Length: 84
Length: 452
Ligand SMILES: Cc1ncc(COP(=O)(O)O)c(C=O)c1O
Image (cartoon, rainbow over all chains, first blue to last red):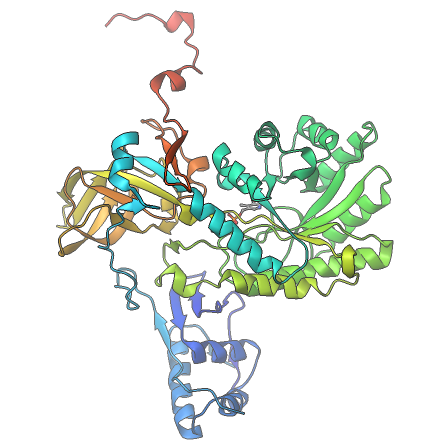
């Protein structure tokens, strides 16, 4: 399954504030966004992330997968991650 | 197990100039008093601009922070970071509350001694300690925090001549996962330099090792960074104990907790992105309990917080000088307090409130100070109600660093007033006058006359 490469200089604060030192851009992630981003940083792949979230949250797999894909596309659009 | 409520994962990019969607209190809410004392009355009596400090707020901030740490760890000691604000009245409040002094220069050291602080309650940090300053500090029994090997060798040399044993800690720098890394002060943890410096001190019979110090950065937005820092300090402490049976009196985690100011380039209001003091305290203290010696021998946790204790206790009252339009039609407002006295406006988006009720219409403006200089911008893109010439405004959260880093440039530095707990006001630093500024100058005889 797909894993993600997150640049090592990116750190997201507990409140979801993300600052990109190379571009000066700033972002805010919501709670689930933070959890996913942190899992990606730890090297988790799509399947592991989906499984972990299904375990933790009250949500069906199809909706989660759609939302997850959309989120990943946004991260890629902002050049915050790359697929390995 | 109950599952958590799901909310779609989301990321929002910040665009400067957008309104804050969280609707913090409207900018038009006037700030007409400080602890019950009228802003206009203060400006009428002490002039404009004028800095105002709240005694009550300083004490409350201190007590709340100390309580937060003390309920999590048995031994906690604060040392007031003089550079943050070294006015005597300010330092004295912190000393009355039990704080020691944390100084970073001989000038600050002398200030603390003059105020009556015994050497053993002074922490002497900083990269530049002259031989004269070191001798004084050794003689007084001050806690000297060594910054580099050249300083350590200088102290070893001095210690062979002095009767008193220098009381030493080292400053440690490390990777805490934050960017940029602060590695210019102290000895590095990762490359083994810190342990080498500690070994050198422990082996030297004329020195006494009493502690470890770090200060990982300022306005830190991550509690996790403190957890990592505390963990690394404990690794060093445990290694000292295992290898040399040395127990430390203290571990000093420095300052760096943010104040409630919003950084430039930060989209959300500070309160929405910053960890709380409880988060920082949990991170630090949970790691300290990993120390291998317990009970009454556990090292004291020393903290040197600056801005988080005093920023929101300071206000700058300023008066509108003029309103004008820039070439692109944008509104510009000129005030009598500029970047010369408000150094922090270079990195904070300071909150500015009118001092009196205003109309409802607002406009996006740029606020300039009175200096004849292009850099004198206090706020870009702030939505304010229409302010007339002579109206007063209050600039919030200016208690840290401004009253020490301010510049004397083309004008005089203003009065500083303290609103006391009993509702009276005291002048704690008188504004400068021409005489005071010129008294330090010498005019060579040959230049003393001219004819035009
Ligand atoms: C050694 C040391 N301690 C404490 C402080 C106070 O820092 P802050 O105001 O970020 O809490 C500073 C400030 O730079 C410092 O250099």
